[in-house]
Length: 489
Image (cartoon, rainbow, N blue to C red; front, side, top):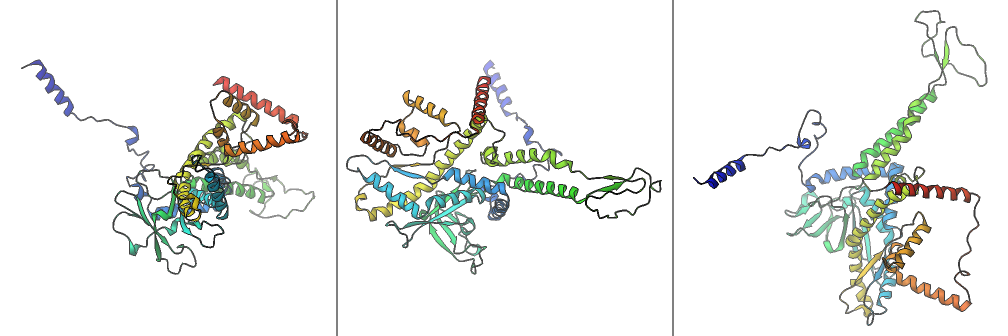
């Protein structure tokens, strides 16, 4: 037998052996059995079935409606993502299309103001945070005071469902019918909200084509078709925060309810004077009295709230805001424990998350609305006919820098070194560079006409306040902290 034959047989026997690899996280023990009891292998749609989503929506809405921090976090998130609303910039080529960019931008801006598009987008973002998803239906509104009659109607998640008596057979997920490729084909929308007092016939619904429905939600799993609340992991934490606050108040009230307590160190039937247990004595103001023989006076003190309340609230708010990529000082609206460096570092992750949210809003919501608007605008404005593509981009509100002077110097350095462009720098502030340059050209021309220098045309600075030296010292300390942290890094 050849030597290589023996090697092949040995390799075959080795390959047939089973490999028994173990992972600690896959082991079930008496210690972790209860912790992992609810873990399952359900699909995304089965795990987020209508009953589960209904329970989560109700609890999330309850906390947002009754928890001040919950309401503030959701409002802040919607204001930061949407702001005053997106602004459209058309990118049609110059030449024969010259002037069409301005026409489309002006008319779309006027239409968006009439239909309150920014307000509806903020409502959709709030609904996505607490309900898990937001629906909008595109329709023609003849009463709209604009040549383009397109309008958007917001729909609550409960209304997108199919009554059990009319369920489709295939490709159906709770009010959404999909085609063979997994694309939404139609939506079933109830005529009334199931919880509305006008809902006399809750089984009545109408079928809306997918082209007329905007469905905005975050898909956490590949097969997920309906959304879950963004604050889903924080719902129990909101409840714990409110319970702990009530417990602290109850402890303080309990201590305050007892003005004084008589107690003695003498044994039962000892030398102290006999008193009735749990007897109540009314005290008068500014009086002097004598206690019974063998008894002393004491008060109940509430030590528990004063030492742990602040720490508990800070940690649980930090954990609540983490699922939204929101730093603690924004969630709590309190930056007392921050300096310049730490505040800027925490905001970087949050602002990156905001940019991701805005990009998804552009793709899922704004582009769909703009395409429908252009389809109607072509019928109203003849000069738009014949153009097949509508290249465009969206501008959002810029974020204010914590140190404008440093940001201005950094911006000047980037421009002088050709590592950025005016379009990019203006876009960070939510501005259109062409509009800003035209406005600047008008200002420079007017200054030359009036014989003013740029220095003379600058606004008069406000008079310094009495706290200005203290503020300068604080900024100096914060800059020193930043330099020390940079050196340490």
